[in-house]
Length: 326
Ligand SMILES: Cc1ncc(C[n+]2csc(CCOP(=O)(O)OP(=O)(O)O)c2C)c(N)n1
Ligand SMILES: [Mg+2]
Image (tube, rainbow, N blue to C red; front, top):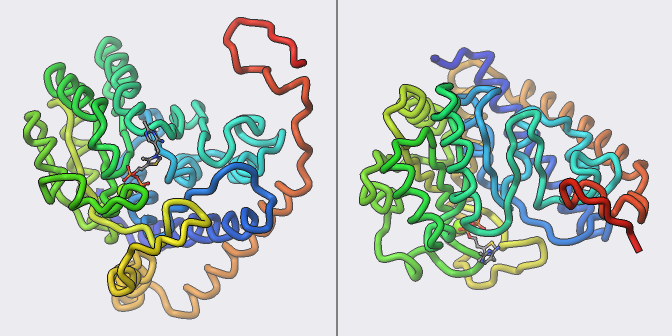
């Protein structure tokens, strides 16, 4: 499907939305209002948004620690996502998941998993299920460059290739795993080469160009949905900040950060829309202000939401077991 002007504007708005969502989370985290850790994907919005445009509502999604905002694009109620980040009772996981472990089966989000590589194994399950049931549902797995050093990555890809499973692998190569540069952890420059070694067709994509991401994802999904087996996309990108909020990322050269900030996915989309006469600078500003207001509402809702009670602490944790909170 070719993207209409309306689609491009909507895609741009979604990127602004997830950026602002995270900027506010950062602010709230620094103010001590969000418990646990905080991992931001600022700089990776093109992947976080555009991949969904090629997927269907009934597909399965497996996200990682960096991608809580993806569930917003999949369709989870933003109020429930914000409240979850705050650990509140009104959160999508009743406050038990927090910013890193959001799951929402109703939109196909099978869980943001923080155990690196776990989703590469677990996602084989939904893919096998689609195969056994004879549906054309696709499983999409999102992970980073560092995760490709895990055993589950290699076991998962091999099995998916041998069994021709309907999986699209989406690797955001943001050049670092915590503070380890990609080039120090991998002997190959392109992770796509690892996938090819398992017999999986793979592409290297500009992960900061939302349209390129969408087009590559469309090719990948078409291949997988037509039961030709898995497909692999490596998105070259960059996260602007350290691994978590509070990590000074002191080992990164300033020029490197500046190089990538100049390639901001939102700036690129905005410039494209303006140069093609689809949107004006004023339209963009108006849209950004509108989004800002919407995020303020979410923050207010999260602040005003109740904390979960102690009695609820073990509810929904152990399946089929009654466990009393002590
Ligand atoms: C099995 C396992 N080992 C180590 C960690 C600690 N850890 C969390 S994120 C991370 C690096 C992930 O890097 P990458 O896959 O490139 O994703 P990015 O954080 O860059 O988005 C590590 C080592 C973990 N969560 N799970
Ligand atoms: Mg990384």
